[in-house]
Image 1 (cartoon, rainbow over the protein chains, first blue to last red):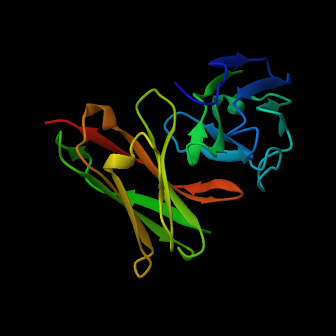
Image 2: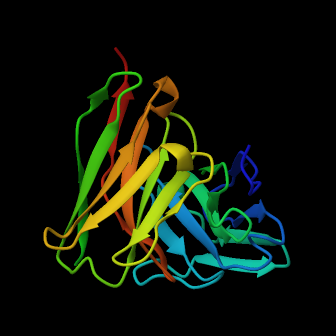
Amino acid sequence: QSMLTQPPSASGTPGQTVTISCSGSSSNIGSNYVYWYQQIPGTAPNLVIYGNNQRPSGVPDRFSGSKSGTSASLAISGLRSDDEADYYCAAWDDRLNGYVFGAGTKVTV
Amino acid sequence: QVQLQESGPGLVKPSETLSLTCTVSGGSIGSYYWSWIRQPAGKGLEWIGRIYTSGSPNYNPSLKSRVTMSVDTSKNQFSLKLSSVTAADTAVYYCARGRFEGFDPWGQGTLVTVSS
């Protein structure tokens, strides 16, 4: 059982906005930065959001992150077919003294 | 541009020790955290632990008794050893650089199967 809770799936049509939630606790999201990774099946994960809401260079501004209290979310606007992937949230956990991941959300376009 | 490449046996017998190495190219291994992360087939990501070029490593508490990580700065490599493996340790193992900006980059991953 993951310490970060994500919905197993989310879907939308091209052009729509899909939002994925990630719920944690005071020891992880509540006191540390949140990261989001995109994983296309058969490939390594790729960072899309760091520091709660920062985009690495090369990641389109259609991807945005936010955090409030012990929850975070990733929004993908202007949905495209190549956004189909699994998305994972992650954060450092002060109690475990290690990183924790959510179980992942499969986005279908 | 920094690139990471995992290497090691793809098949390990139950109760033996899994050993993997990650080679860092295109940059120095110094001044960063280096992590191992694994993913069983069809399942999510699990952080195994991280090591810095100096100081004590951090391990996932659920694996801590079986994990050892080390760094060889002369070879620009870091390594993972996981002892007493079982079928539950069968997974794709990734190495990744860790910093404030997240785990980036990642290696391509290597499948390790535990079977007799």
